[in-house]
Length: 347
Image (cartoon, rainbow, N blue to C red; front, side):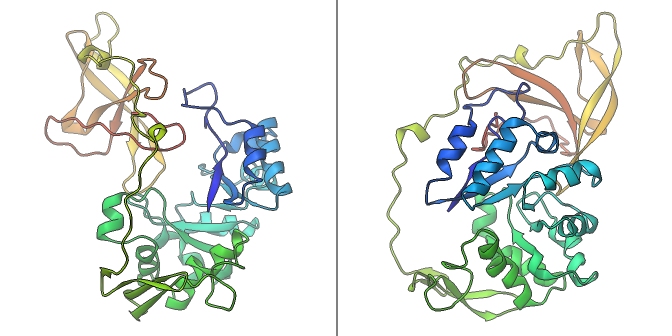
């Protein structure tokens, strides 16, 4: 099961996406059996402001009886948040503090507590259950942006459940938050979420509830693994041509593409800097005074100010946007490049 992307592009007028999904596209997708809802409605100002596209997409999802997923990436829990919830989103995974979880549940949403490769938001928010005593049926455990290395070395949802238990949550409650609660939220409780007659026999056998040590894995009644060994053969997947070679730069990049020119005659300039917060999605708006060398604004490695660039990779426009970032902690001259297969992300 998957959810239909709701915001491609996510910030119309500010980015170049590889495609544009319309309200008609969303309405059609809601007729597909494997689509269980509308995914991550990121345009929260549009929802609160009755943007026609957002209103139409949410209405089509509700008409189909499917779940509207939320994505409220703002710390303002006042009227803008209330307007967003009134617009239709039924869950949210962007909370980072206990107050965020409480606010979402109070407004009738399901609070999704995430543990990804970079986002560590379960420990702070689970206190809404363990300390405030809120009903755990209104909470869901989830991942968000889990890298392949995390999945292999640490686990997937088992890692999240294990972490929640370590924060003081009762094992059975933690398991419920990752199974039954989730199935009911997405209207899938007739298929999954419990080991009961008529449901798909997807379950684990564990030797210890606290550490969630997995002994056996079953899917649809068939044992797939035991003692850490796979017992079935998984055939290789042949990716279609349209899924390959999707990074289209349009031209070869040059060193000059990453130059940031300083005002003529300046020896130092004040710049805006993206401040990374360790293990959280939100960033801080910082400023820094940077030196100028040969007419170009220079990085300040000693004070952890590095350069960051975004390169358009969908349409081959050759566009490069430069800026500065702090929080990576690089102590040597180095560079890295990455892409991600998200809705409209670039290099």
